[in-house]
Length: 130
Image (tube, rainbow, N blue to C red; front, top):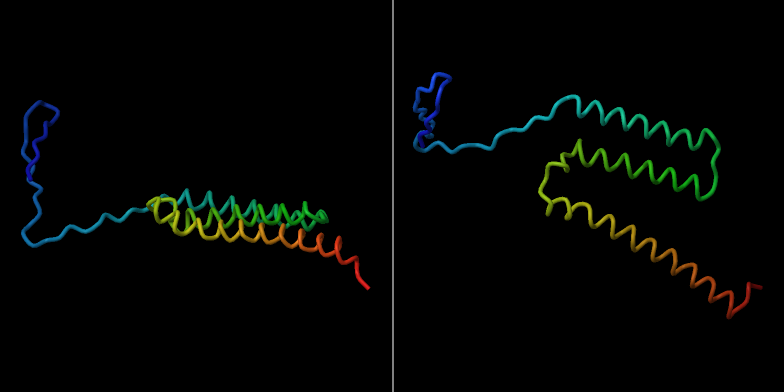
């Protein structure tokens, strides 16, 4: 494969960059800037501090658990996206890894509602207990 280029003076030069016979080109290695990793480390530190602040300020009930789970999911998302290089993967690979945990969460939520319904119907038809 030959490619013609022009230099700054308008003269053409032929550049021969054909691979040698029998040499198989390898995939280029992509390196990410260190700044990206440092920013992610910073965000992980901030999210961890917020998670600890929930306990420090003594929040209770659903607010406490909701905040802890939100911070946990944000940290897990950052780790998977950047440190496990998921942000640079094909969409099919992302779906293969991300969809199953989301479905587990959906089915768990469905089981929670089903358990409440079952408890409600047992109390309604059989009474509150001995």
